[in-house]
Amino acid sequence: MLSVVVPCYNEEAGISECHRRLSAVLAQTGDPYELVYVEDGSRDRTHALLLALAEVDAHAVVVRLSRNFGHQAAVSAGLEVARGNAVVIIDADLQDPPEAVLDMVALWKAGSHVVYGVRIHRTGESRFKLWTAKAFYRLINRLSDIDIPLDTGDFRLMDRRVVEVLLHMPERHRLLRGMCAWAGFRQTPLPYRRAARYAGTTSYPLGRMINLALDGIVSFSTVPLRMLTFVGFGAAFLSLVGILYALGVRVLTQHWVPGWATLFVGVLFLSGLQMISLGIMGEYLGRVYTEVKQRPLVVIASVRRAGEPFPSPEHSWKGTAPPAENVARLLP
Image (cartoon, rainbow, N blue to C red):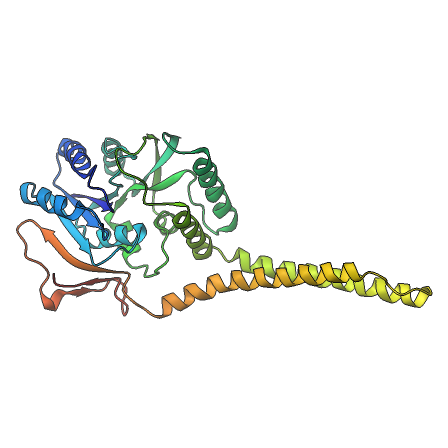
């Protein structure tokens, strides 16, 4: 069985076309399949349209979150609900072509555990976004202890064994493409050309992109903390040189060190350096604070699956990383 997880946020303009193209592609595989739509607290008619699709197509599974938790959390909820031997992650905006899923399935059946899409061309995106995306992946690879493939997103197929590994990783600040690379197994790239959005506007503005970049760097690297140590040693060395210079001038000459301006600039420099250092440590500390609270990653308000009722009270919570549940399921 093949599962396709589709996170949806304000996708009413394109969700019908997305379902049509995905259904046409999956029918060609000849295997049983399900389409797991995760409605991430949309403010438009996305949920109503998904329920209408589920009424006429038994392959559609509609997962509704209690509010907007964000893209990575929504995908994680979809992975929790998906039942397939392999799971594909694809966005509803049709920038990633559903037709490439056929190639992913073929590579999976040939022995690959992960097949990830590599963007060789990106249509409809600004130069700024293209440049920042390239800079991010190269930066995180420089800083991280693992190699995250360049120019990739979350568009990928994963074997059930890889999915189970991800479900047992309970961190709240998630970069799934990095977690998937960390999991290992046999991973195969699939080059493809990325299209422009079919409809609507992006749900990843600059602020969310920056947060995702911070999550990736902080979650997979302690290099920034080590850099602070080296910077501290460098500042101490410069301070020692300054002290020796001041003592030398005072002892060997008849002049005081005049440089009030140097002192003023030095104090500002060191103060700024200290604030940056505190900020970096605060990013790590804030994530530790979030993790130790052990709250569920997302709250699922309802699951609409053909032929099955909503979750009963005794099964309303399901934890994949004891003792903290990744996903909380509530009755509608």
